[in-house]
Length: 196
Image (cartoon, rainbow, N blue to C red; front, side, top):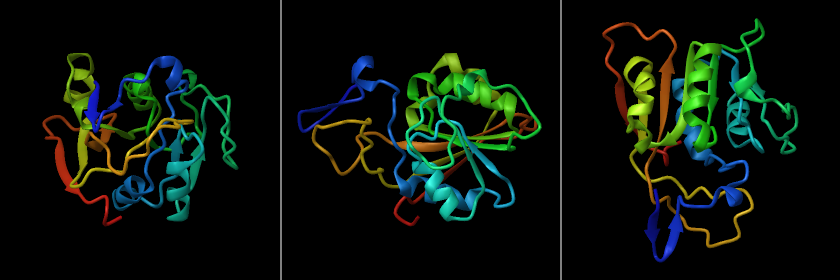
């Protein structure tokens, strides 16, 4: 999924370059999600990285349990936690909010739905495509929040190349429900990243 802009290539970084696939979520994307979250519900961020999503949620007064496979130095986060190996437990929050590594987004979403009733995933809008995730889209996708504007460009951790102002592709928040009521139609809503 390569896109060109001014001679700069996006989305085609070699796996060796992407390492842990860490692309931090722009703060405005998390702030735009906040009105759609229940402040009484603790949140689990299982791919917290250095804390882009966690910081915005905590600043808004949410209780956040932050974990990641790698510890990036975020105070209060638990490193060395392989989310895909986690099993249901009484302590687990009922809401998961995350921007998982793109290469693991399907697996993260499927597994998250075994651990929490509500799951918010931040991904490219094109993630809606693909027969391999039809089970997720057709059975569990409940709400899509698409930005009216393009987000700031997200660069992989350690990127030393040009820093562009806007992303070349649209992103959205996708809310999945483990038990979406039969017959419910997926809601689609346009939101402003700038207003957040």
